[in-house]
Every structure is written in structure tokens, then in C-alpha cells.
Image 1: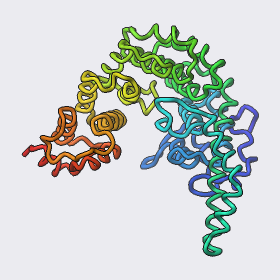
Image 2 (image 1 turned 60 degrees about the vertical axis):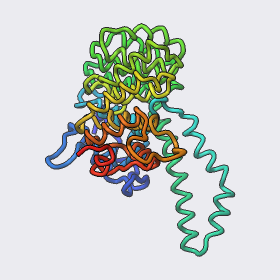
Image 3 (image 1 turned 90 degrees about the vertical axis):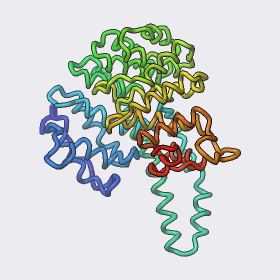
Image 4 (image 1 turned 180 degrees about the horizontal axis):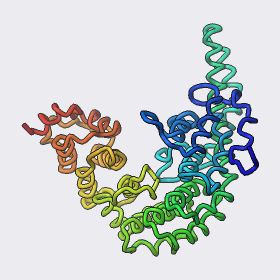
Length: 400
């Protein structure tokens, strides 16, 4: 190996010491080398980047091993000889925050995450007391191991985020790369570090103003909203009446993050909820779900309960078919059913006729369209004593 090799020093890392979701991390170097070779999936398998993500950020949980990969991923992302460099930045984002749907539409609060390991260390006496109260040696050992693992996981979150944070000044140059996917993914990465907004916000404004790809420019606007810098409001507002729906959507979403939700903003969000743009590879938030993010933002505004907003949710949900619209469907159904079936009913309805207009339309749409619902929506139906099995729901609605 030479110094120009992004993987220089890879074998010097004691990979048998840190652990990932499936055990020791001695298989991580092989996945990094496979990514360096082109990140191509062999027949019947997944891309090395996907396999590595599953190991070190399994279902959003950052492992001990994750932080050790950061220097190599950063170098590969910056190396123009690397293929599909946006995948390295995508993995770096996952290492920093896990799954973005856990933090949208509000953004990442590093201080909250950072407080957890500190609180755990401060509760050492409580943990020791809980361990001492174990019924036998086996249970005592289990409790000790449980406490140790929880603390390890919490510290891994903090260390992983900080490692990626330190690389931001170097990675920011990728906003000017030749690849629209790489530019967009870099803007997406910057969105999750509000404490670096003094660095990122000016760069993102320049990026958005020059960006030719609507999806990538929209990603930059959303990132500005999540960073939460009030000084960026006039710049973001300038795109609220853009000729491109992606930019109008991004401007409206970003403005809600900055506390602005007037009629012009909610009108744009409502339109996108009903008819979202097609997914592209240059808008990575929430797996590219324009409609999902729009309804998340709309649901937090006073306009969420208006007939216009409800009609938009119903229209959007009616068109959410196919696997590629899963995120849209999940978010729309979650917000619609939370709105239509809040909490526990004082008196559960005896029949379909006892439901109000919005509830009837929502249930009827699900019954007649056989639309798959997220758990939150089926839980709402269950609380209201409404059938959740499709065949029973058809009978309940009165469809033969």
C-alpha cells in the first residue's frame, strides 16, 4: 500500500477488539476493500456498502466498530478514483445519526444523544443496586452484561457522531463535485450537524443557488431548514414560488422548521401531500419521500385539521400504491389516522354509520383500496374497535 491509498493502515486497526451487530469486527476490512473495488453486488447478494451498513449500523444502532471505519470512508469519498462516492457519504451519515426517520421532521439534537451516556455513568449506584438484587449468580451476570452493553452502545453513538463531525470541513468540498448524487448526499450529511451551521449554511446557500438538479437543490434547502439558522429565512423564502415543485416543497418544509407556517407555506405542503414529485436519486431524505416529509411538516401546523389538508391526505393515500411509494404511504396513513382517530374514544362506534365523515372516508379508502397500513394506523383502528383484517373491514364498510 502507498500513502495515496485510501485504505492505507487498514490492517493496523485491531479489528478483533471492537464489535458490531453480529460479533467481532474482523470482517469489516473485507467489506471496505470490496467498496473500494467498486461497491458492486455479486449475483444473489447485496452491495458491500449495504452489507457493511447492516453490520456496523444495524437498524440504525451504531456499534463500536462504526467509528473505526470513518477515516477510511472519508478518504474513499474524497478520492476521485473511487466509484459511486455518494455511497461512502451515505454510510458516513448513517454512522453519524443512524436512521433519519427517527429524527425527521425536526433534525438531530446532538446534546440529547450526548446526555445519555453521561446520565448512565451518573446512575452507576442505581445499576449496582439493581445488579446486587439479582436472584442468583446467573441473573447477576446478565444484569452486569446488560448494563455494560447499554453503556457501550450509548458511547458508540457519541463517538461515531463526533468522528464524522470532525470530517465535515474536508467533506464539504464535495458540494462542488461533478456527480449530482454526491453533491446531494453531501448536503444531506451537513443537515445533521447544527453545531456546524456557521460552516455549512453559507456553503449550502451557494450550493442551492448554483445547483442544476432540482432534487439536489431541494436537498440543500431542506438541510438549511434542519440546521435552523434564522438568518437563512430570506434565502429560503425566495424559493417558495419557484417554478420547480421540488424547490417549492423544500422551501415550505424548511420554513416550518424555522417556525414559519403561513398560508403560502401550508398551501405548498398540501399540494405536495396530494401529488408529490417522483422520487429521484438526488433527494435522500426519508428515502426520497417528498410526500412523507410534506405531511410530517403539515401535521405540525394549524392547517392540519382543515378540510383541504384532510382531502390532500386522502388523495395522496389513494395514489400511494407499489413498493416504491412505501414511505409516502406509511407517513400519510400515520398522520391521517392520528388525526381522524385520536386517543381512546369515549364511546367506541357500533357501526360504520357512527363514524364521522373524515373517519368514514379514511376507513373506506383502506377497505376498498386494500392499502397496507403502518402499525400506528392499525393501532388506531384497534383502539376504536374497528376491524383491521381486510375481509372484515370490507364487511364493516358494507362493500360486497
